[in-house]
Length: 449
Ligand SMILES: Cc1ncc(COP(=O)(O)O)c(C=O)c1O
Image 1 (cartoon, rainbow, N blue to C red):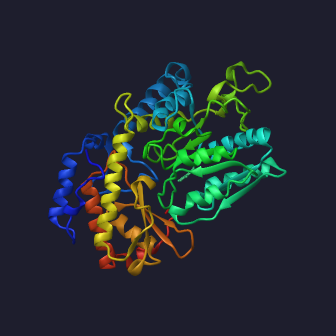
Image 2 (tube, helix red, strand yellow):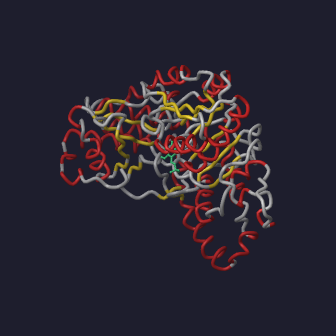
Image 3 (cartoon, rainbow, N blue to C red):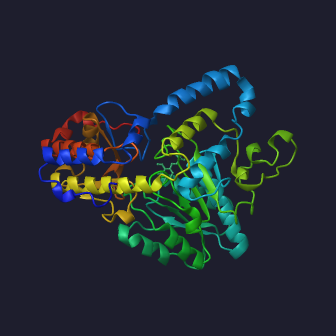
């Protein structure tokens, strides 16, 4: 099985046909190689952006077409019962639960990650306030912006004394210490993203949760860049709440529904703030007055988006083989691929690419980011457009400061091959060395980067 023990020493400099043959050999011995067949990938594209939008599972188009033409077109409204539409949030949640160490019946699939964060952060603050009188939320300044925007809105609604405190961005290896130092007795909730969207750095969920609990602080984990990418065990970590995306490593499609988990000790403590009818104990009783459903169903709000639910269900199924948890094997391949990518880029791209992701695989997710330096300093966007033009699809993010450019490359082990890693680096090295990114058309900014 590929692992960190991949024979990187066999890769000479510059990229050579022997090194490529070594990658082909790794693919031939890859126990997960067959998973790639479950995905529809365009010819000539090396897709390193599954951390933004996962690829299309082959099963999805036919399944969604069936939902449209048969379940909707023929059976019409009856499908809410006969096709199990009404049970989709719970059913898809149960399919997802093993990937995050949750139990059946504990995960709700609904809304977006931002909306689910609004729900769980509001509830967490209510619990903390009742138990400890505290109202301060701590997060990181370089958390994903929507998390911080939502937290700003929640503390504003909570009124008197509620506030958001941000731990300044710092080097990956100093982040945990800075967070721990911020956990004074006024803190109610620690709200963290497990794998950072920009750097790919991963927190030690279990350790930080334990330290936060020792200070009486509840912890919310955003698993947007973790679910389907790294093993997560929410019960083992004793987390309090979690949320995450369906459209990244779960391959659920653009705008796929998100998910939400609440520890059983919290799930029924309070009514969530978006108390819509789908979270009511008896939605079709049409009674006056809101009565929350039992368990995680109370975190539902409105009608589930059935077409998107069907696509997400296919995305989750595309990672799994029966009931077995696929995350161990996927993680081993992800570590081997990201290590190979780092080594090849550093060997063949000179000083133009400075690693922004932790070198220690235990400290990173399934993404590798580089700062644009030297010949490509300040030209990160153009370099990424030039790569996309050559069929190597990653993405671009502004760094923590305006003059910092970050090139992001996501590695989805379910559909990527080692030879893709090699060929991607060959293209990156050529784009950097040839200066082809200087073509003016690569400077034209699109709305989505
Ligand atoms: C950490 C994190 N949280 C949340 C989101 C997005 O949330 P939403 O699904 O509400 O757009 C992203 C998107 O990239 C993200 O990286």
